[in-house]
Structures are given as C-alpha cells and as structure tokens.
Image (cartoon, rainbow, N blue to C red; front, side, top):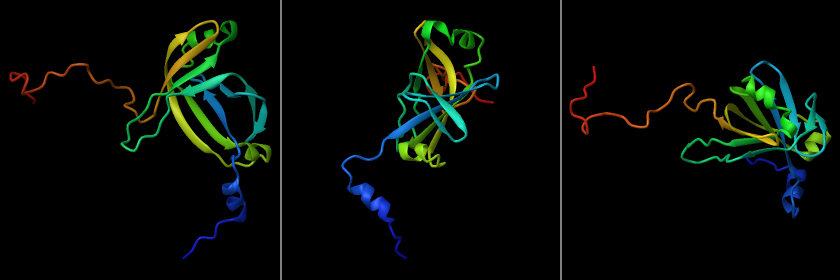
Length: 162
C-alpha cells in the first residue's frame, strides 16, 4: 500500500524557507485564572485572544534516552505587575501549555498544533523587570525528592532492609 503525498506538502518541501512556527503559551494559575500570551502581535486562535507579552521558554529538549529536561520560563514583569501573583503562590504548581502552530493555521483558525505541557514548579528569580520559573514534566517525580546521599550496603554494612 502506497501513501499518496498531497501536492501541497510536495510544494512546501521545495520551498527554501518553511512557514514559521508560532509559540502560544497558556498559563493556568493555581487559583483557576488563565493567561493566553505570545511574543509579538496579538492573535485570535482556538477561541482565545492571545495577548502580546515577552515570554521565553529555554532549556527544553527531547532526548532519545528519555532524560527529562527542566526548562526555564521567563516572563516580563514590568514594574512588578506579576509580583503579587507570584508572592500569593498562584504561579507555583500552575500549568504551562505551549501550543506550536504554523502561522497559516493561526490565520485560518485551524486547530492544527503541537501541544506540550509542564508544571511551573517554583520561581527561581524575580525582579521588577522579569520573573523566571523552573518547569517540570508532570511525570517527573511529582512530589518526591531523591536524597543527596544514600546510606546503603555495601558501603555501609550495618544498614539493613526490613
């Protein structure tokens, strides 16, 4: 069985530059409030208005060895506008959704996208100009920590398991 490749896909492959991706960020705060933001101009897509706000997600990677990354989210905090939300604790354990959409799909309001989700774990830095957060995969050891030092045999022969 041979799969027919649509002509539109063949034409896209021959272009020197492909259509640009647009990253849309949906932040669902712990108190239930929602922010829909993106870099650049405002857009309407998927029934929501995505407002312009300088935002950056760095350190995200996909590895073949299934190692999870902990990306950093940086959000502008002009004159401390978001400081109250952060200090109230509503950003901790908030959900961050990143929709990666082609520009032509935004213009046509088509629901074609790649969706990734993280939990905003904690605020690592906050100033009056920006805030930075550590994000975690929802399956990345939720609510438990590995101790820095484990006291196990054979290094510690007097330790036993029950």
